[in-house]
Image: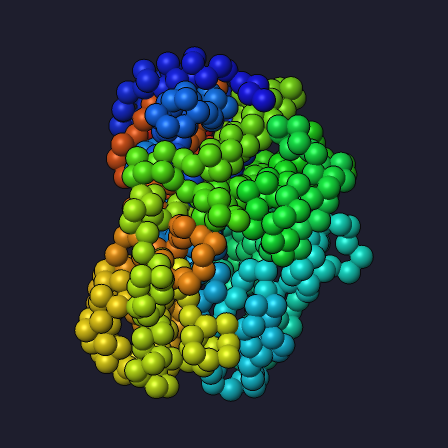
Length: 577
Protein backbone atom coordinates (compact mmCIF):
# COMPACT_ATOMS: atom_id res chain seq x y z
CA UNK A 1 0.00 0.00 0.00
CA UNK A 2 2.06 2.93 -1.29
CA UNK A 3 0.97 6.21 0.26
CA UNK A 4 3.62 8.68 -0.85
CA UNK A 5 4.47 10.12 -4.23
CA UNK A 6 3.87 7.79 -7.20
CA UNK A 7 6.87 5.68 -8.13
CA UNK A 8 7.13 7.24 -11.56
CA UNK A 9 7.40 10.73 -10.14
CA UNK A 10 9.94 9.65 -7.56
CA UNK A 11 12.01 7.92 -10.22
CA UNK A 12 11.97 10.96 -12.49
CA UNK A 13 13.22 13.15 -9.67
CA UNK A 14 15.95 10.70 -8.78
CA UNK A 15 17.15 10.56 -12.34
CA UNK A 16 17.52 14.33 -12.35
CA UNK A 17 19.81 14.33 -9.30
CA UNK A 18 23.32 15.67 -9.79
CA UNK A 19 26.33 15.27 -7.54
CA UNK A 20 27.45 18.29 -5.57
CA UNK A 21 30.21 18.68 -3.05
CA UNK A 22 28.29 21.07 -0.81
CA UNK A 23 24.86 22.61 -0.42
CA UNK A 24 25.27 26.19 -1.52
CA UNK A 25 21.51 26.74 -1.22
CA UNK A 26 21.79 26.52 2.56
CA UNK A 27 18.76 24.26 2.78
CA UNK A 28 19.12 23.87 6.51
CA UNK A 29 18.29 27.55 6.97
CA UNK A 30 14.89 26.94 5.39
CA UNK A 31 13.57 24.55 8.04
CA UNK A 32 14.43 24.30 11.72
CA UNK A 33 14.88 20.66 12.67
CA UNK A 34 13.12 19.69 15.90
CA UNK A 35 13.07 15.90 15.51
CA UNK A 36 15.29 13.22 14.01
CA UNK A 37 13.85 9.88 12.89
CA UNK A 38 16.72 7.41 12.56
CA UNK A 39 16.02 4.11 10.80
CA UNK A 40 18.41 1.24 10.24
CA UNK A 41 17.27 -1.19 7.55
CA UNK A 42 19.77 -3.87 8.53
CA UNK A 43 21.39 -5.35 5.43
CA UNK A 44 20.20 -2.61 3.05
CA UNK A 45 23.01 -1.99 0.56
CA UNK A 46 23.42 1.19 -1.45
CA UNK A 47 22.72 -0.94 -4.53
CA UNK A 48 19.47 -2.19 -2.99
CA UNK A 49 18.23 1.38 -2.72
CA UNK A 50 19.39 2.19 -6.23
CA UNK A 51 17.63 -0.85 -7.66
CA UNK A 52 14.38 -0.46 -5.74
CA UNK A 53 14.13 3.27 -6.52
CA UNK A 54 14.97 2.97 -10.22
CA UNK A 55 13.86 -0.58 -10.98
CA UNK A 56 15.95 -3.46 -12.26
CA UNK A 57 15.17 -6.07 -14.88
CA UNK A 58 14.14 -9.33 -13.27
CA UNK A 59 12.28 -7.83 -10.32
CA UNK A 60 8.76 -6.37 -10.23
CA UNK A 61 8.63 -6.32 -14.04
CA UNK A 62 11.54 -3.89 -14.10
CA UNK A 63 9.53 -1.21 -12.28
CA UNK A 64 10.59 0.56 -9.06
CA UNK A 65 9.46 -1.19 -5.90
CA UNK A 66 10.20 1.20 -3.02
CA UNK A 67 8.20 4.37 -3.83
CA UNK A 68 8.20 5.64 -0.25
CA UNK A 69 11.97 5.51 0.10
CA UNK A 70 12.31 6.90 -3.43
CA UNK A 71 10.01 9.77 -2.54
CA UNK A 72 12.21 10.63 0.44
CA UNK A 73 15.13 10.87 -1.97
CA UNK A 74 13.33 13.56 -3.98
CA UNK A 75 14.05 15.84 -1.03
CA UNK A 76 17.13 14.04 0.17
CA UNK A 77 20.88 13.65 0.06
CA UNK A 78 21.88 10.15 -1.04
CA UNK A 79 25.38 8.96 -0.09
CA UNK A 80 26.19 6.11 -2.45
CA UNK A 81 29.68 5.38 -1.10
CA UNK A 82 28.77 5.11 2.58
CA UNK A 83 30.61 2.55 4.69
CA UNK A 84 29.39 0.82 7.84
CA UNK A 85 31.71 -0.07 10.70
CA UNK A 86 34.57 -2.55 10.35
CA UNK A 87 33.83 -5.18 11.63
CA UNK A 88 30.31 -4.84 10.26
CA UNK A 89 28.46 -6.75 12.98
CA UNK A 90 25.16 -5.34 14.30
CA UNK A 91 26.59 -4.30 17.67
CA UNK A 92 29.49 -2.16 16.41
CA UNK A 93 27.38 -1.13 13.43
CA UNK A 94 24.71 0.34 15.68
CA UNK A 95 27.13 1.92 18.12
CA UNK A 96 29.14 3.55 15.33
CA UNK A 97 25.96 5.21 14.03
CA UNK A 98 24.99 6.69 17.40
CA UNK A 99 28.47 7.49 18.78
CA UNK A 100 30.55 8.80 15.88
CA UNK A 101 33.33 6.43 16.94
CA UNK A 102 34.99 3.38 15.40
CA UNK A 103 35.54 0.06 17.22
CA UNK A 104 39.06 1.09 18.27
CA UNK A 105 37.65 3.94 20.37
CA UNK A 106 34.27 2.63 21.53
CA UNK A 107 35.72 -0.83 22.30
CA UNK A 108 32.90 -2.67 20.53
CA UNK A 109 33.99 -5.28 17.98
CA UNK A 110 31.14 -7.79 17.86
CA UNK A 111 28.12 -8.85 19.91
CA UNK A 112 30.21 -11.91 20.86
CA UNK A 113 33.85 -10.84 21.30
CA UNK A 114 36.55 -10.98 24.01
CA UNK A 115 38.00 -8.78 26.74
CA UNK A 116 41.32 -9.56 28.43
CA UNK A 117 40.41 -7.32 31.39
CA UNK A 118 37.09 -8.97 32.28
CA UNK A 119 36.11 -12.29 33.80
CA UNK A 120 33.25 -14.59 32.92
CA UNK A 121 29.61 -14.36 33.99
CA UNK A 122 28.36 -15.88 37.22
CA UNK A 123 26.09 -18.32 35.37
CA UNK A 124 26.09 -19.64 31.84
CA UNK A 125 24.35 -17.42 29.27
CA UNK A 126 21.50 -18.64 27.14
CA UNK A 127 23.95 -19.28 24.31
CA UNK A 128 26.53 -21.15 26.40
CA UNK A 129 29.03 -18.48 27.43
CA UNK A 130 30.55 -19.17 30.84
CA UNK A 131 30.33 -19.45 33.71
CA UNK A 132 33.75 -18.20 34.71
CA UNK A 133 35.53 -17.42 37.97
CA UNK A 134 36.04 -13.88 39.22
CA UNK A 135 37.96 -12.69 42.26
CA UNK A 136 37.53 -9.08 43.30
CA UNK A 137 40.75 -7.12 42.99
CA UNK A 138 42.65 -10.01 41.41
CA UNK A 139 44.25 -10.02 37.97
CA UNK A 140 41.64 -10.76 35.28
CA UNK A 141 41.67 -14.04 33.40
CA UNK A 142 40.04 -12.64 30.27
CA UNK A 143 36.81 -14.02 28.86
CA UNK A 144 34.47 -14.04 25.89
CA UNK A 145 31.94 -11.20 26.02
CA UNK A 146 28.32 -11.53 24.93
CA UNK A 147 25.85 -8.71 24.31
CA UNK A 148 22.80 -10.13 22.54
CA UNK A 149 19.92 -12.49 23.40
CA UNK A 150 22.11 -14.71 25.58
CA UNK A 151 21.99 -12.24 28.48
CA UNK A 152 18.18 -12.11 28.62
CA UNK A 153 16.51 -13.60 31.65
CA UNK A 154 14.68 -15.92 29.23
CA UNK A 155 15.59 -15.54 25.57
CA UNK A 156 12.74 -17.83 24.49
CA UNK A 157 10.24 -15.13 25.44
CA UNK A 158 9.45 -12.07 23.37
CA UNK A 159 9.56 -9.94 26.53
CA UNK A 160 12.96 -11.39 27.44
CA UNK A 161 11.56 -12.95 30.60
CA UNK A 162 11.22 -9.68 32.52
CA UNK A 163 9.15 -10.29 35.67
CA UNK A 164 5.59 -9.03 35.29
CA UNK A 165 6.20 -7.68 31.79
CA UNK A 166 3.55 -7.56 29.09
CA UNK A 167 3.68 -9.97 26.17
CA UNK A 168 6.28 -8.04 24.15
CA UNK A 169 7.73 -5.44 26.49
CA UNK A 170 10.57 -6.40 28.81
CA UNK A 171 13.15 -3.74 28.01
CA UNK A 172 16.14 -3.40 30.32
CA UNK A 173 14.21 -5.27 33.03
CA UNK A 174 14.74 -8.43 30.98
CA UNK A 175 18.53 -8.24 31.28
CA UNK A 176 20.05 -10.82 33.62
CA UNK A 177 23.14 -9.39 35.39
CA UNK A 178 24.28 -12.87 36.43
CA UNK A 179 24.84 -13.65 32.73
CA UNK A 180 27.02 -10.59 32.12
CA UNK A 181 30.80 -10.49 32.20
CA UNK A 182 32.26 -9.26 35.47
CA UNK A 183 34.95 -6.71 36.20
CA UNK A 184 37.41 -7.81 38.92
CA UNK A 185 38.66 -4.23 39.21
CA UNK A 186 35.13 -3.18 40.22
CA UNK A 187 34.54 -5.88 42.80
CA UNK A 188 33.33 -8.37 40.14
CA UNK A 189 30.33 -6.17 39.34
CA UNK A 190 28.45 -7.15 36.17
CA UNK A 191 29.18 -5.03 33.12
CA UNK A 192 25.87 -3.82 31.65
CA UNK A 193 25.64 -3.16 27.90
CA UNK A 194 25.86 0.63 28.25
CA UNK A 195 28.81 0.28 30.63
CA UNK A 196 30.64 -1.89 28.12
CA UNK A 197 30.66 1.01 25.63
CA UNK A 198 33.62 3.34 26.28
CA UNK A 199 32.13 6.48 24.72
CA UNK A 200 29.02 8.58 24.96
CA UNK A 201 26.36 8.75 22.25
CA UNK A 202 23.90 11.18 20.75
CA UNK A 203 21.36 9.94 23.28
CA UNK A 204 23.41 11.26 26.17
CA UNK A 205 24.11 14.60 24.52
CA UNK A 206 20.49 15.17 23.49
CA UNK A 207 19.02 14.06 26.82
CA UNK A 208 21.38 16.30 28.78
CA UNK A 209 20.37 19.22 26.56
CA UNK A 210 16.73 18.71 27.54
CA UNK A 211 15.67 16.53 24.63
CA UNK A 212 13.45 13.45 24.80
CA UNK A 213 14.97 10.27 23.37
CA UNK A 214 13.69 6.88 22.20
CA UNK A 215 15.01 3.78 20.44
CA UNK A 216 13.60 0.38 19.44
CA UNK A 217 15.78 -2.61 18.54
CA UNK A 218 16.04 -6.40 18.40
CA UNK A 219 17.70 -7.21 21.75
CA UNK A 220 17.38 -5.73 25.26
CA UNK A 221 21.20 -5.65 25.16
CA UNK A 222 20.99 -2.89 22.56
CA UNK A 223 20.11 -0.50 25.36
CA UNK A 224 23.84 0.01 24.76
CA UNK A 225 22.78 2.99 22.61
CA UNK A 226 22.77 4.98 25.86
CA UNK A 227 26.57 4.71 25.96
CA UNK A 228 28.75 5.51 28.96
CA UNK A 229 26.30 8.13 30.26
CA UNK A 230 24.04 5.31 31.41
CA UNK A 231 20.63 3.99 30.51
CA UNK A 232 18.95 6.96 32.19
CA UNK A 233 19.59 9.09 29.09
CA UNK A 234 17.33 6.75 27.10
CA UNK A 235 13.82 8.00 27.88
CA UNK A 236 11.86 5.37 25.96
CA UNK A 237 13.36 2.00 25.01
CA UNK A 238 11.59 -0.93 23.35
CA UNK A 239 13.32 -4.22 22.66
CA UNK A 240 11.18 -7.27 21.85
CA UNK A 241 13.63 -10.18 21.66
CA UNK A 242 14.00 -11.29 18.04
CA UNK A 243 15.53 -14.66 18.88
CA UNK A 244 12.55 -15.71 20.97
CA UNK A 245 9.87 -18.27 20.23
CA UNK A 246 7.35 -17.11 17.61
CA UNK A 247 3.85 -16.44 18.91
CA UNK A 248 0.65 -14.81 17.71
CA UNK A 249 0.46 -11.04 18.22
CA UNK A 250 -3.14 -9.95 18.89
CA UNK A 251 -3.96 -6.53 17.49
CA UNK A 252 -0.83 -6.35 15.33
CA UNK A 253 -1.30 -5.80 11.58
CA UNK A 254 1.47 -5.15 9.07
CA UNK A 255 1.57 -2.08 6.84
CA UNK A 256 0.27 -4.30 4.04
CA UNK A 257 -2.82 -5.16 6.08
CA UNK A 258 -1.81 -8.69 7.11
CA UNK A 259 -2.92 -9.77 10.59
CA UNK A 260 -0.33 -11.20 12.97
CA UNK A 261 -2.90 -12.34 15.55
CA UNK A 262 -2.01 -15.91 14.63
CA UNK A 263 1.43 -17.13 13.61
CA UNK A 264 1.64 -16.40 9.88
CA UNK A 265 4.10 -19.14 8.98
CA UNK A 266 3.39 -22.08 11.25
CA UNK A 267 5.50 -24.42 9.10
CA UNK A 268 8.68 -22.50 9.94
CA UNK A 269 11.12 -23.20 12.72
CA UNK A 270 9.38 -21.26 15.48
CA UNK A 271 12.40 -20.92 17.78
CA UNK A 272 13.24 -17.51 16.26
CA UNK A 273 11.47 -14.82 14.27
CA UNK A 274 14.43 -14.81 11.86
CA UNK A 275 13.61 -18.32 10.61
CA UNK A 276 10.73 -17.15 8.43
CA UNK A 277 10.28 -14.58 5.68
CA UNK A 278 6.73 -13.93 6.91
CA UNK A 279 7.09 -14.11 10.68
CA UNK A 280 9.91 -11.57 10.79
CA UNK A 281 7.58 -8.97 9.28
CA UNK A 282 5.20 -9.41 12.22
CA UNK A 283 8.13 -8.98 14.58
CA UNK A 284 9.29 -5.77 12.87
CA UNK A 285 5.74 -4.43 12.94
CA UNK A 286 5.94 -4.33 16.73
CA UNK A 287 8.68 -1.72 16.44
CA UNK A 288 6.93 0.11 13.60
CA UNK A 289 3.89 0.49 15.88
CA UNK A 290 6.20 1.85 18.58
CA UNK A 291 7.40 4.55 16.19
CA UNK A 292 3.83 5.41 15.18
CA UNK A 293 2.89 5.77 18.85
CA UNK A 294 5.88 8.03 19.47
CA UNK A 295 4.95 10.26 16.53
CA UNK A 296 1.51 10.49 18.16
CA UNK A 297 3.19 11.89 21.25
CA UNK A 298 2.97 8.66 23.24
CA UNK A 299 5.40 6.15 24.64
CA UNK A 300 6.14 3.07 22.53
CA UNK A 301 3.35 1.26 24.39
CA UNK A 302 0.80 4.06 24.10
CA UNK A 303 1.24 5.95 27.36
CA UNK A 304 1.26 9.72 27.60
CA UNK A 305 4.55 11.32 26.49
CA UNK A 306 5.71 13.61 23.72
CA UNK A 307 7.20 13.16 20.28
CA UNK A 308 10.90 12.43 20.82
CA UNK A 309 13.69 14.72 19.76
CA UNK A 310 15.55 11.62 18.54
CA UNK A 311 13.82 8.31 17.94
CA UNK A 312 14.02 5.36 15.62
CA UNK A 313 14.29 1.61 15.10
CA UNK A 314 15.97 -1.15 13.17
CA UNK A 315 14.28 -3.35 10.58
CA UNK A 316 15.38 -6.98 10.49
CA UNK A 317 13.20 -8.08 7.54
CA UNK A 318 15.61 -7.21 4.73
CA UNK A 319 18.48 -8.95 6.49
CA UNK A 320 16.37 -12.11 6.81
CA UNK A 321 15.31 -11.78 3.17
CA UNK A 322 18.97 -11.70 2.19
CA UNK A 323 20.32 -14.53 4.32
CA UNK A 324 17.61 -17.11 4.80
CA UNK A 325 16.92 -20.41 3.09
CA UNK A 326 13.51 -21.54 4.33
CA UNK A 327 12.29 -25.00 3.36
CA UNK A 328 14.30 -24.85 0.14
CA UNK A 329 13.21 -21.30 -0.74
CA UNK A 330 16.23 -19.03 -1.02
CA UNK A 331 16.49 -15.40 -0.14
CA UNK A 332 19.30 -13.20 -1.39
CA UNK A 333 20.00 -12.22 -4.96
CA UNK A 334 19.84 -13.68 -8.44
CA UNK A 335 23.02 -12.08 -9.77
CA UNK A 336 25.93 -9.75 -9.05
CA UNK A 337 23.81 -6.74 -10.09
CA UNK A 338 21.69 -7.16 -6.97
CA UNK A 339 18.49 -8.44 -8.56
CA UNK A 340 16.51 -9.59 -5.52
CA UNK A 341 14.87 -12.97 -5.23
CA UNK A 342 11.09 -12.88 -4.77
CA UNK A 343 11.63 -13.45 -1.05
CA UNK A 344 13.94 -10.45 -0.68
CA UNK A 345 11.74 -8.31 -2.94
CA UNK A 346 8.80 -8.92 -0.60
CA UNK A 347 10.85 -7.87 2.43
CA UNK A 348 11.97 -4.62 0.79
CA UNK A 349 8.38 -3.84 -0.17
CA UNK A 350 7.24 -4.53 3.39
CA UNK A 351 9.87 -2.17 4.84
CA UNK A 352 8.98 0.48 2.27
CA UNK A 353 5.28 0.26 3.19
CA UNK A 354 6.19 0.60 6.87
CA UNK A 355 8.36 3.67 6.26
CA UNK A 356 5.42 5.10 4.31
CA UNK A 357 3.23 4.72 7.40
CA UNK A 358 5.72 6.70 9.46
CA UNK A 359 6.00 9.51 6.93
CA UNK A 360 2.25 9.78 6.59
CA UNK A 361 1.90 9.95 10.37
CA UNK A 362 4.51 12.73 10.53
CA UNK A 363 2.56 14.65 7.91
CA UNK A 364 -0.75 14.09 9.71
CA UNK A 365 0.70 15.68 12.85
CA UNK A 366 2.39 18.56 11.02
CA UNK A 367 5.84 17.26 11.96
CA UNK A 368 7.21 16.36 8.55
CA UNK A 369 8.87 19.71 7.83
CA UNK A 370 10.57 19.82 11.22
CA UNK A 371 11.86 16.23 11.10
CA UNK A 372 15.14 15.04 9.63
CA UNK A 373 14.69 11.48 8.39
CA UNK A 374 17.85 9.36 8.23
CA UNK A 375 17.73 5.95 6.56
CA UNK A 376 20.82 3.79 6.79
CA UNK A 377 21.94 0.30 7.85
CA UNK A 378 24.12 -1.16 10.59
CA UNK A 379 25.65 -3.51 8.02
CA UNK A 380 25.25 -5.03 4.57
CA UNK A 381 25.51 -8.74 3.65
CA UNK A 382 27.99 -10.69 1.54
CA UNK A 383 28.15 -12.01 -1.10
CA UNK A 384 25.55 -10.33 -3.31
CA UNK A 385 26.73 -12.49 -6.22
CA UNK A 386 25.33 -15.96 -5.42
CA UNK A 387 27.98 -17.61 -7.62
CA UNK A 388 30.66 -16.35 -5.20
CA UNK A 389 29.22 -18.15 -2.16
CA UNK A 390 31.76 -20.51 -0.57
CA UNK A 391 30.80 -22.07 2.76
CA UNK A 392 33.55 -23.39 5.01
CA UNK A 393 33.02 -26.16 5.82
CA UNK A 394 30.71 -26.95 2.92
CA UNK A 395 29.57 -29.75 0.67
CA UNK A 396 32.42 -29.22 -1.77
CA UNK A 397 34.92 -27.64 0.62
CA UNK A 398 36.18 -29.56 3.62
CA UNK A 399 38.20 -26.59 4.84
CA UNK A 400 38.46 -25.25 8.34
CA UNK A 401 37.78 -21.85 9.80
CA UNK A 402 40.90 -19.96 10.95
CA UNK A 403 40.04 -20.44 14.61
CA UNK A 404 39.47 -24.17 14.16
CA UNK A 405 42.77 -24.55 12.30
CA UNK A 406 44.65 -22.77 15.08
CA UNK A 407 42.88 -24.76 17.77
CA UNK A 408 43.68 -28.05 16.02
CA UNK A 409 47.36 -27.29 15.51
CA UNK A 410 48.39 -24.94 18.33
CA UNK A 411 47.16 -26.40 21.58
CA UNK A 412 46.39 -23.90 24.35
CA UNK A 413 46.82 -20.98 21.94
CA UNK A 414 43.18 -19.96 22.27
CA UNK A 415 41.37 -19.06 25.49
CA UNK A 416 38.98 -21.79 26.60
CA UNK A 417 35.90 -19.60 26.10
CA UNK A 418 37.02 -18.79 22.53
CA UNK A 419 38.18 -22.26 21.47
CA UNK A 420 35.87 -23.72 18.79
CA UNK A 421 36.83 -27.19 20.00
CA UNK A 422 35.95 -26.32 23.58
CA UNK A 423 32.72 -26.38 25.54
CA UNK A 424 32.17 -22.61 25.56
CA UNK A 425 30.43 -20.31 23.11
CA UNK A 426 33.45 -20.45 20.80
CA UNK A 427 35.13 -18.11 18.37
CA UNK A 428 33.76 -15.11 16.47
CA UNK A 429 33.50 -16.13 12.83
CA UNK A 430 30.90 -15.22 10.20
CA UNK A 431 32.37 -13.87 6.96
CA UNK A 432 35.30 -12.68 9.02
CA UNK A 433 37.38 -14.32 11.74
CA UNK A 434 38.35 -12.42 14.89
CA UNK A 435 40.99 -14.31 16.86
CA UNK A 436 42.03 -13.66 20.44
CA UNK A 437 44.99 -15.70 21.73
CA UNK A 438 45.93 -16.71 25.26
CA UNK A 439 49.28 -14.98 24.84
CA UNK A 440 50.67 -12.67 22.12
CA UNK A 441 53.65 -15.01 21.82
CA UNK A 442 51.41 -17.35 19.84
CA UNK A 443 50.74 -14.73 17.14
CA UNK A 444 53.70 -15.55 14.88
CA UNK A 445 53.02 -19.28 14.89
CA UNK A 446 49.30 -18.75 14.33
CA UNK A 447 49.89 -16.41 11.39
CA UNK A 448 52.40 -18.82 9.82
CA UNK A 449 49.84 -21.60 10.13
CA UNK A 450 47.15 -19.46 8.47
CA UNK A 451 49.48 -18.41 5.65
CA UNK A 452 50.40 -22.03 4.95
CA UNK A 453 46.74 -23.06 4.74
CA UNK A 454 45.09 -20.24 2.82
CA UNK A 455 43.18 -22.53 0.48
CA UNK A 456 41.77 -24.44 3.44
CA UNK A 457 40.63 -21.34 5.34
CA UNK A 458 39.38 -19.28 2.41
CA UNK A 459 42.52 -17.25 1.76
CA UNK A 460 42.07 -13.50 1.96
CA UNK A 461 43.92 -10.96 4.09
CA UNK A 462 45.49 -11.54 7.48
CA UNK A 463 45.81 -8.52 9.78
CA UNK A 464 48.13 -8.67 12.77
CA UNK A 465 50.86 -6.62 14.42
CA UNK A 466 51.38 -3.28 12.72
CA UNK A 467 48.85 -3.96 9.95
CA UNK A 468 46.18 -4.44 12.61
CA UNK A 469 47.34 -1.62 14.88
CA UNK A 470 47.08 0.83 11.97
CA UNK A 471 43.30 0.92 12.33
CA UNK A 472 42.85 -0.50 15.81
CA UNK A 473 44.64 -0.22 19.12
CA UNK A 474 47.54 -2.57 19.79
CA UNK A 475 46.23 -5.77 21.41
CA UNK A 476 47.13 -6.54 25.00
CA UNK A 477 46.56 -5.28 28.52
CA UNK A 478 47.01 -1.70 29.71
CA UNK A 479 49.14 0.31 29.75
CA UNK A 480 50.67 -1.08 26.56
CA UNK A 481 47.65 -2.56 24.83
CA UNK A 482 43.88 -2.65 24.43
CA UNK A 483 42.23 -5.65 26.12
CA UNK A 484 39.52 -5.86 23.45
CA UNK A 485 41.57 -5.72 20.26
CA UNK A 486 41.86 -9.10 18.50
CA UNK A 487 45.36 -10.50 18.03
CA UNK A 488 44.53 -11.50 14.45
CA UNK A 489 41.75 -10.58 12.02
CA UNK A 490 41.24 -12.76 8.96
CA UNK A 491 39.21 -11.30 6.10
CA UNK A 492 38.64 -14.25 3.75
CA UNK A 493 38.05 -14.14 0.03
CA UNK A 494 34.80 -12.55 -1.09
CA UNK A 495 31.96 -15.02 -0.71
CA UNK A 496 33.50 -17.16 2.03
CA UNK A 497 31.19 -17.77 4.98
CA UNK A 498 32.34 -19.75 7.99
CA UNK A 499 29.26 -21.91 8.52
CA UNK A 500 28.07 -25.44 8.03
CA UNK A 501 24.45 -24.33 8.03
CA UNK A 502 22.28 -24.91 5.00
CA UNK A 503 19.89 -22.18 6.11
CA UNK A 504 21.86 -19.14 4.99
CA UNK A 505 23.27 -17.83 1.70
CA UNK A 506 24.80 -14.58 3.00
CA UNK A 507 26.47 -13.29 6.14
CA UNK A 508 27.94 -10.08 7.53
CA UNK A 509 30.62 -8.90 9.92
CA UNK A 510 33.50 -8.56 7.47
CA UNK A 511 35.22 -5.80 5.54
CA UNK A 512 34.06 -6.80 2.04
CA UNK A 513 32.33 -4.17 -0.10
CA UNK A 514 29.02 -6.01 0.19
CA UNK A 515 29.37 -6.03 3.99
CA UNK A 516 29.95 -2.30 4.40
CA UNK A 517 28.53 -0.35 1.42
CA UNK A 518 25.18 0.49 2.95
CA UNK A 519 22.34 2.81 2.14
CA UNK A 520 22.59 6.28 3.66
CA UNK A 521 19.92 8.89 2.95
CA UNK A 522 19.16 12.19 4.71
CA UNK A 523 15.78 13.66 3.88
CA UNK A 524 13.80 16.77 4.75
CA UNK A 525 11.25 18.73 2.66
CA UNK A 526 13.60 21.72 2.61
CA UNK A 527 16.32 19.76 0.80
CA UNK A 528 17.00 19.73 -2.89
CA UNK A 529 17.79 16.21 -4.16
CA UNK A 530 21.42 15.37 -4.67
CA UNK A 531 23.82 12.45 -4.74
CA UNK A 532 27.16 12.51 -2.94
CA UNK A 533 29.70 10.17 -4.48
CA UNK A 534 32.61 10.83 -2.11
CA UNK A 535 33.30 8.18 0.51
CA UNK A 536 31.66 8.72 3.88
CA UNK A 537 31.02 6.58 6.94
CA UNK A 538 27.98 5.83 9.06
CA UNK A 539 30.00 7.16 12.02
CA UNK A 540 29.32 10.63 10.56
CA UNK A 541 25.60 10.23 11.25
CA UNK A 542 25.98 11.00 14.97
CA UNK A 543 27.65 14.42 14.68
CA UNK A 544 25.28 15.29 11.83
CA UNK A 545 22.29 14.57 14.07
CA UNK A 546 23.64 16.92 16.75
CA UNK A 547 24.46 19.65 14.27
CA UNK A 548 21.00 19.41 12.76
CA UNK A 549 19.45 19.88 16.21
CA UNK A 550 21.67 22.87 16.94
CA UNK A 551 23.91 21.00 19.36
CA UNK A 552 27.70 20.87 19.41
CA UNK A 553 29.07 17.67 17.76
CA UNK A 554 32.28 17.99 19.77
CA UNK A 555 30.32 16.89 22.83
CA UNK A 556 30.66 13.39 21.41
CA UNK A 557 33.74 11.51 22.57
CA UNK A 558 34.06 9.96 19.12
CA UNK A 559 34.24 13.38 17.46
CA UNK A 560 36.91 14.64 19.83
CA UNK A 561 39.02 11.47 19.85
CA UNK A 562 38.77 10.53 16.17
CA UNK A 563 38.04 13.83 14.43
CA UNK A 564 34.73 12.58 13.02
CA UNK A 565 33.12 15.17 10.79
CA UNK A 566 29.53 15.79 9.80
CA UNK A 567 28.24 14.41 6.52
CA UNK A 568 29.04 16.52 3.44
CA UNK A 569 26.50 17.76 0.95
CA UNK A 570 24.41 19.90 3.30
CA UNK A 571 25.58 23.01 5.12
CA UNK A 572 24.52 23.16 8.77
CA UNK A 573 24.19 26.76 9.87
CA UNK A 574 22.60 26.55 13.30
CA UNK A 575 24.33 28.22 16.20
CA UNK A 576 25.99 25.74 18.51
CA UNK A 577 24.70 25.48 22.05
